[in-house]
Image (cartoon, rainbow, N blue to C red; front, side, top):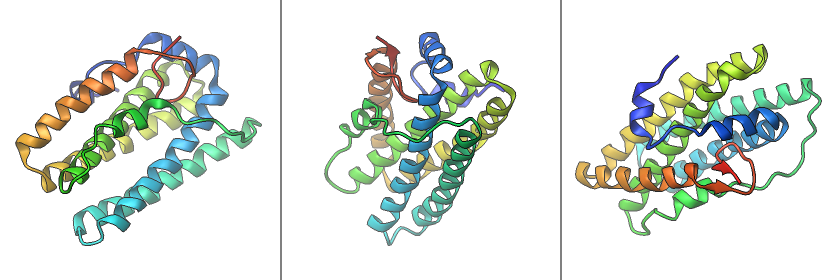
Length: 200
């Protein structure tokens, strides 16, 4: 499965060195992936609470939160079958690095948050695609299935950004976030995580 739209949206592909690190440390990959699904659901619910008068946003985020929690449970089941114990894994610098770009005033704050969400979902999708050919049957099938939902999430975030912002401003934000996201993905990273950069 190729995802040309996602590849066009992102500023770069996942480096081969990250794929190799992921295959060598599938325990950390799964734990961090589980954590990311939970964070994605939490973020969606926080946006619903904060922007309680935005009907289209609430509808999208409600569905997204449910879906991310289902993915969270699915990863937990895979971990249980593989006898991978839960343990604390620190967050990568990725999401916090992108959130530094979010402006503090509305409606720009909402628009920037939605654009950042679109990039996180798009990168997740692209990483699943990069991993699928190298994984065992169970994990390959699971990650292959997640490709479709993550691509829907990316599209939903981006559509809402254009709905609540001015097109030219959203375009500018997309360019800005794309450059920062590429920097985080292509620069050396001390710790391996689902969204980490090139292993140092």
